[in-house]
Image 1 (cartoon, rainbow, N blue to C red):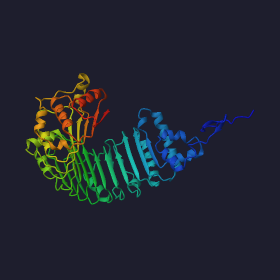
Image 2: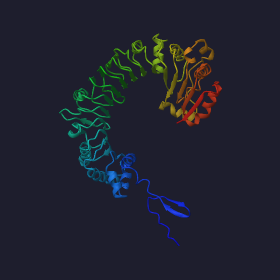
Image 3: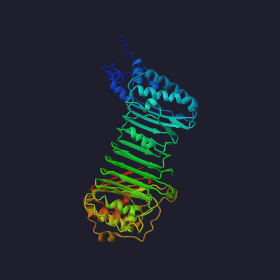
Image 4: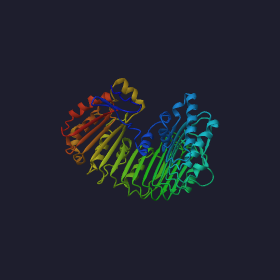
Length: 492
């Protein structure tokens, strides 16, 4: 009797004409570049196990171009934390100077005085390996100041840098650096230098993207750059920022998110003649100057608290050619009060209205929405978003229904009388997190009107909790939506 071949590990065996036929190992025959690409998606723990399979896999694991050293998961297990760090030390040493385009370190440490030099050694190897993208998230509980390593600061290959220090202090070397850097993101960083941002911009001559996310220790942010095209400034949790002054000739997109305790004299100045995309949310400062916005095409205004409606009057006088508008209902009410509605926008084709889950469509808001829609002649997309309000979540869970609207009711006849030609051209409607909006009479009547008179309507998208799906589908059917309209309900 003929002896059957014995299958080996990592091989597949198929039946052919009564005999077992051994097929080749499909993974092992992959080209190195394909195998390396697949390995780049694995966690370091998986890479450690794979590296002991064979000499080839060990060589491939050591040569992975994009690495992530994530020690955050071992925050509560000191033994695994130490073992993992030992493995990473050996791993990075064996790589020597193999090219590493992308390197991410996420580390938490209670003993930075013992572990700091080891993390800095990893960064040193990354610099020697011509790192281009460096992402650092360090939660250093035992250190007050992190000094940016000089070799990282002067790295010629570095193009994209992200630093998140969980509120710790960052200090840069006194000399110039980051000369080739194109993108810089600072998150939860505290600085001691009041002119930190100005100093960074003075030597980052190639920088085209800057993100400052809750950077503290600065009272004034002055942005001057000949290369910057994207700027993002967010300050939600602190009150030490008082003045933002942006003067950038080539700036294409600006995002400002600013919340603060109403105290002190705060100002926002923007001089960006080529600005195309502007997002402004949070609270309105006491003084502002927006400059020339004739090139603006997308405007997202979600100011929840306004010290004066004069902000909006000046804003909307200079943004007549926008194509996309995002606006919070509080801003709508302020526009109505200031007598600014309707505003004629011939180029606008996309509108998004942001509610808070506690707002509802009360009687004060209905005329504002009607006048806003009256100013559009080419509207194609309508997006209504209801933000979650933590204070209302308990009510939703307990009562299984949203807060009632404070409304006497504007029925469909009201909307018909407004002769909103913008609704007739509407093609797509999206409703997101619609707790509180589909139940009140005002909002129901508006939706009925839209679904009945939007003759070109093609699609309705609804994002909602899964427990509300059946009700929402019944509500859409009740509104008389045509069978040709595609309806998509996504549950969260």
